[in-house]
Image (tube, rainbow, N blue to C red; front, side, top):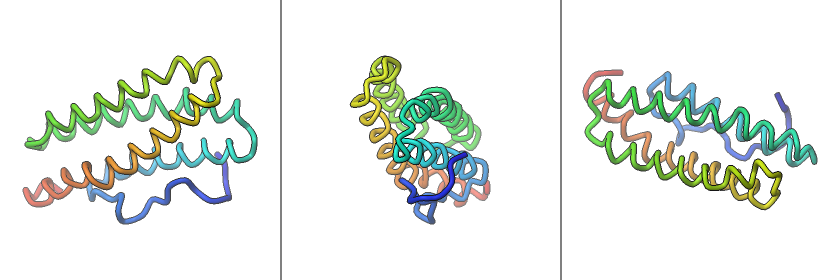
Length: 140
């Protein structure tokens, strides 16, 4: 794990959904993004690409799947539209993946930037809604 330096994302109140399991997973995503960014800043591009490909993308897929199961379990009314948003993210990352695999630095920066922006905005705006719903229904 990489330590020190300025993080890409600080895990602050605007990223808390109040669904403990999802918040833990979101924290892990933020940690992986920050670690990838730190490796890049240190000039360790190959390690950063490996972390991005082998851990960050796999964990993101795991998280999106778990999040969809959670929303299904609580009967979240916006489940289908939320799944569509996840699918757009998956498609964008899959489109960039072959270029990242080839070691294309521009594609890697683009994929990292896209993942960072998407995850931050998605958690802060979209995911918070299922937390509010679960709380209103007395599920958390």
